[in-house]
Amino acid sequence: MKINIISTENIKPSSPTPDHLRSYKISLLDQLAPPFYVPLILFYSADEFRSNNIDHTLISDQLKKSLSATLTHFYPLAGSLKGNAFVECDDEGVSYVEARVNIDLSMILQNPDMDLLIKFLPLDPYKMNDKGIPMSAFQVNIFNCGSIAIGVCISHQIADGATLATFLNAWSKAAMGESKTIIPSLDLASLFPPKDINVKVPSGVISEEKTVTRRFVFDATSLALLKDKVGHANPTRVEAVTSLHMENRHVYQIRKAIKKIDNDYIEKLQGDNVLEAFESKNELFESVSKKEAEMYRFSSWIRFPFYDIDFGFGKPIWACTTTVPIKNIVVLMSTKSGDGIEAWVTLTEYDMAKFEHHHEILEFVSSTEF
Image (tube, rainbow, N blue to C red):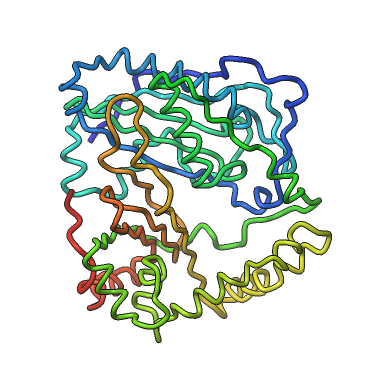
């Protein structure tokens, strides 16, 4: 597969950001986020283009114009991060890339190559945010068959998966010409004020060992069977998948840990004794750095409505993320049908060789074909 870059340009908000909004404080939660990007790729079939005789040139103009209009309301995405405290909303703009792919989309869907997917993104999402790297970037990839893949990267220090979904929903509605505009709430710093702290990424986050990312699909039938096998506590789909291949089925422990994020915990985050809220986390990082413990991270995106994002040429046939250079991390995403889960699992090569052939994985994972 070859991807040829056709054009690269800078898209600015269609209206300048008012002076009183030029300095956007990032919240404490943003300060604690890793200096990476949130990556997403949306694949759209050519069938919609053919049936409605949609011209790709008009699509390009429509996407750029609507992106510019949307950035007016999501103005921090077009700004510049200054240290660990605020974004200068200087309307510098976002990177917008158009590319041609020399194969048909069906070649990707038949047997998705995890290592190739990152090529549909405008940049490496796990490269540290150095000076000059935009807060957000986009790449529109056009396949030989006429299908399109839109690759999105938004800085994790001003956005998470939920923010990304809100932004894409607003952009798509603008592209469809809808009069109702989605106005985001940009006051998280008032709820979680930033602190004078210098958060460092724990050593070893970017794995020195060779990692492998695999995609495991659980359809509605296999999820029901898995929930029955877990049995107690009436587990959710996420809890059931998270507990898979765990010793003693730690569903109850998972739920108990989540419940610790209660009002008292939130008050600590909002108050002056914020370090108390991270005592256990810091202890864990210390244990991991000393190789006394192994840490696994889980992130669930299954409630995010990525499959509803319609720019005027149909809804996505696949919404996915990419490989992660961080070992022991799992990203859970919804399947197109909405009742299944895709688990994007990254482990060391040695651990993955054992994990993907474990009898429970083989028992519950369904076909990965589209």
